Length: 488
Image 1 (cartoon, one colour):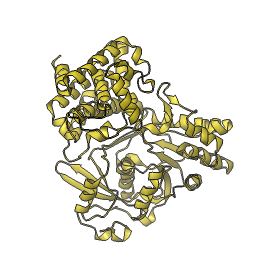
Image 2 (cartoon, one colour):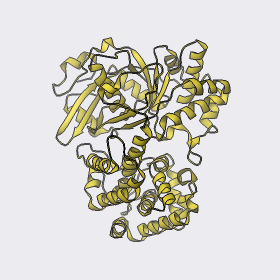
Image 3 (spheres, helix red, strand yellow):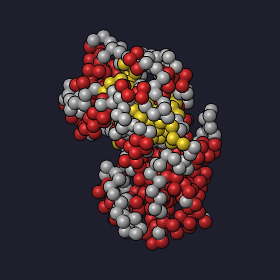
Image 4 (spheres, one colour):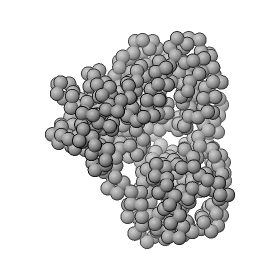
């Protein structure tokens, strides 16, 4: 059955529906980046909140600045902005329809509709999921890069910006001119200090065309930091077929694990929905939660991703069931990651590791190792390299993390051990493949990627560990190399 407002009342009884009158909702939040994660996370929290009968003036309006966003808009507008979200647990699937979004602005090359919607006085929050690599951070300096061609272009044409940050600047400029208070900008992306990173991106973009406006933004606009968490696989034919098994004709369903978490700084001058009523944690310790999650969970994903993929594990739960991969994850986490993570009110590092092992092992989620291997050039410097640097600084072991880096290099050779091709899996794939080939005879070439490793190529200890592991991977294969690491 086609999903839309008219068919909600006739859906399969196994499918949960919004527990509120959607016609009573009004706009309050513009969200840019309507991928699977947002629809399984922020939109679900709001759906739960609206079902309590409160804060119906905080509904979502979707938006995007990339060409694929137009396709998502077309799909969601055709079903009245309803989304299918299916929680997958070992004891069964739980489908629900999320109704927290009420509109999706037209995707336009000059972003005029988006700027207009952000200028609307009803818009009090602009939230973002634009991926880890979407913030124009120079990994060598770990700061915003104002020289990026996209940002330079927005500086030259501030009234027709191409980036989300240029659009935010244009809307804030218009609001200030009209005497309207600024909206809060809330990043929901999985990057350290996401609020601070977003402030740098917005003010840095503004500075290209209007330094005085940049100072006004810095002084007047709130950018709360947050930590977000929910494993949300990509959507393909299997996910669409799963939705169809519940009688749902939805081209863009979302599947996810049952677990979700959201930790936020309470910094919303223009107000916010009462998300604490539905499980969101408001705290001034966001960075501690974030460090634990990024180091243990996202770093853990990288640890099992390349080892699992190279050993032929297509699914994440298959990788966790592989004795070598699971033992490798456990050893690296316990010896090289957990010692550099502090407890938070809800978890000790060891308890959090137990939780993520349970989550990774969920056979119902059907997450893929390929998804976890995606975009290593953006993920490695955020999820793995910080633990390496901490270990080196404290004189602790980084042996297993050096092996993880070597496994990433080996994966980027572009073929499995049986010669089967690995399809491109990074925005910079061709360069990585060529660099992996060079590293086969000169391993330090891989570490000379300053945007990933900084100056680690000049660290004799780490360079020697990495070189040794990479040479072993090529000479002995993945299985024998992992066995050697675990036997030590």
